[in-house]
Structure formats: structure tokens, C-alpha cells
Length: 395
Length: 162
Image (cartoon, rainbow over all chains, first blue to last red; front, side):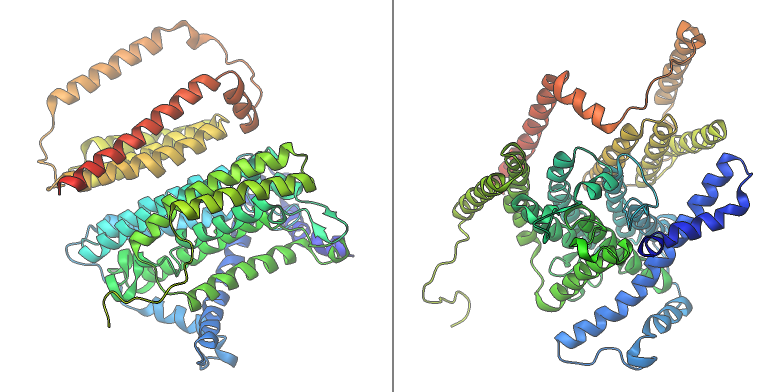
């Protein structure tokens, strides 16, 4: 029963492909790929609609107001209203804009965001695009986003757009480094670049309660936090949303976009957020594995989306809680703290591996991380001191 | 299927390269160049060299293209080209192309059938890089670190003067 429910989507796909049984191989491949693409788009565009209204609801709750509550029960049909509004808005292209580049930027940014979703395993046997170098594919596709952002900024022929694009690219390039380096320890320990192998390596548990997810090891926990923060920056979310800080540079590289093109940017940002969170789940939170063996009767894809939802909630929570950081603070943080810590994670993972992956390895890797963390805090002078508060600019 | 894909990718790559060489606006040329890079990555995929194709996209589209675009943006005041065709450059390009074509057509390896090689996995590349080619790898690493530090020093001096 549970296994048939677990594989229900695979069965449906096989049923859909059954009428093509005698067809040549390439027809089957294309049909299979099309089914995967439609499933992926259907699921994630629905999730985008749900998250966009949930985010406003949760933010409203955190800020002690109602949030959207006019359209449908509890305002749940708000995305439909938003979609119709965006579709019938006038599409304004600035007269001095570079028309072709201005037009292509939102398409490219959405395409790269959606492509990155393809390599994530959503459940047992449920990887839409299973390739050997899946992790590399994810980052290769993600790195083209910078070009799309530049195209948006430059094509608009507007100072605010260009400044926003420069900020966005600067912080995206800076945080791509820790983002990629924090995946190295996982890739090293598993010995494979394929997301399926990484999920498979996190199977099993100790004492029946402690799952073998990489987040339960010290290096994994540190790498997960670094990865998550870098992911916040990569998807331009608060507290790192300077590229589109409304009060400073209008909407950054999206200033000159209106109507559906703006909605496309908005969608790409959310899809990028889903992709980064999905990769974090795959790398550190055990992918589609259930936390304990007794709960394995719940289908694997449910577990994946539960974990994804928790991460997305943290994204929204951060947005509702934290103020915006300055661009120089973001850059300093990236190069002086995130990068050294990311490298330390690699060493900690190696120590964990050579100390036998057991309790001893656990303590030794924690020691490595602790020493570097304390050394960094001394070097960067960020330790908390207790003293009388002094005011520099106000008395 | 493969030969059809080859023709499509070849046309796309050649068109993008031609556009990169001939478009009047430099930024357009740089963006077409990025498309040509993607075309070359597609060739690698077609040949089964998945890893090389991904690295091609990663390094050339993600880093080199962004670098080119920024170089144009930060150094040029007028990003519009004069529109005149650089005949000297064109002649050199055609000469190089002719030379390469002649060399490729003359080579005896063209008639030899490609040997059946096993699929090159990422794991094998990693293993070879860490054993047989560890010294070249370290040298490249040192060179890149030196370049990074050099760039930092340039920027720091600039700040002290200003």
C-alpha cells in the first residue's frame, strides 16, 4: 500500500507513456521529458502561487495585521487576482531602452531558474533530469543568472536599473563562492556529484532516532547554515535585498519592467528560492528520506515538500524579522567570514572522515570548526563587549 | 538524431559567433559571444563529455562573459562601435580559418574511426586530477591565487592615492 502510494507518480507517467510503446526511442525520450517538464512547471508554479499568498499572510501575522483577506476564503484566491492584474497591465518599454536585451532578460532569468529545479530528487525515483554531474549542472545554470540580471539592468538604460544590477551581480558573485564551497564537503564525503547518490548516502539512522543526514554532523550543520545564508543572498531576499531595496533604488534592475515581465522576474526570484532550498534539503537534510524509520509509510515526496516548506517558512520569517544590511556589510561578511568558514567546513569534513565517521570524528570536526570560529571572531574583532553605550551621532 | 542535433547546434554557434564579430554594439557582441559559448557546451554534451560541457557553461558563461561585459561597461565611454569593418582583422581571421581547414583536411587521423571509449565520469576526472596531474593542478592554483592577490593590491593602491 505505502509503496504503491510512494510510486504513484511514476506509475502515472508509465501509464501516460504506455500508448507510445512501439514508437522509436527518441520519441519516447521526448515524451518522457515533456511529461517531466509539465509536472515540474505545474507543481512549482502552483507552489509559487501558494507561497506568494502565504508569505503575505505570515508577514501580516508577524506585523500584527491581517494581510490579504478579500479574495476568496481567507484571501486564498489572491494569486488569481494578482495574475489577472499582471496580465492586463500595460507593458511599458522605455523609448531609449535596448529593446531586444530588455525583452530577453526576464525570459532568460526565468528559464535558468526553472532549469535548476530539474536535477533535484523530489522522491524515490523522482528526479526529473538525473545526470551524473547534477550539482555542477545546478551551479552552472545558476551562474548564468548574473548575465540575465546584467541584461535587465543594461537593457533598461536607466541609472537605477544599472546600479541595482551592479549591486545584485556583486553580491551574487561574492556569495556564489561560499555557496559552492559549502557543497564540497558533502560531495567529498559521498564521493559523487549526483543528487541521487547524495540522498542515498543519507539513508539510515543511529539508535533508531538520529537520522544520518549530513546536518547532524558538525561540519554538515556549519555548512548548512552557511549554505542557507548564501542562498538568502543569491535569491536577493531580506536581509540581503539591497539590489531591489525599494526605499533606495526603486526596484533595482527591475525598475523599468512592468506588467507580466515584472511578474516573470518576481516568479524567477521565488523559483530560485525554491531551487536553492530544494538543494539544501537534498544536500544536508536527507532529501526525501523520512526522519525516523517508523514514519517511512508516508510517501517520500511528502517528506521532501515538508522539509522544503520549513525552509521556505524560515525565509519568510527572516524577511518579517530582520532589517536590511548595507552593501559593504554584505561584502565584508562574505569575504571575511563566510569564505574562511566554508573552507573550514571542508577540513572539518576531512577530519570527520579520517577519524572514522563516529563519535570521535564528531568531536574532532567540532573542535576544528570551533577553533577557526573563535580565531575569526578575534581577528575580525566581532566579540560582544559589555560597556556603557556611547552615541556617535546623537546625544 | 545526433547528426540533426549537430547541425542545429552548429548553425546556432556559428550564427552567434558571426553576430559577436559583426554587431555594432559591443554589449550585443558580448552577449552573442555568451550564446556561442553555450553552443560549444552543447557540443560537449553531444559528445558525451558532460563534465566538460558543464564546466564550459560555468566558467565561460558564468564568469568570462560577465567579466567581458563588465570590462566593456567600465572602460568604454561609448559602447557603440563606429560600424566600419576592420579589414585587416577580417583578412587575418580568414587566413587562420583557411590554415586550420587545410590542416584538418590534410590530417591522416580524419579517416580513422573513433575508438570506443568508456564514458568519462566525474569521479574518474577527479581521481586523475588528484593523482597523475596533481602538480599541474597545484601550479594553476598558485597562479590563480597570485592573480587574485595581484588584483587586490592594484585596488588597494588606488584607494591610498585617492
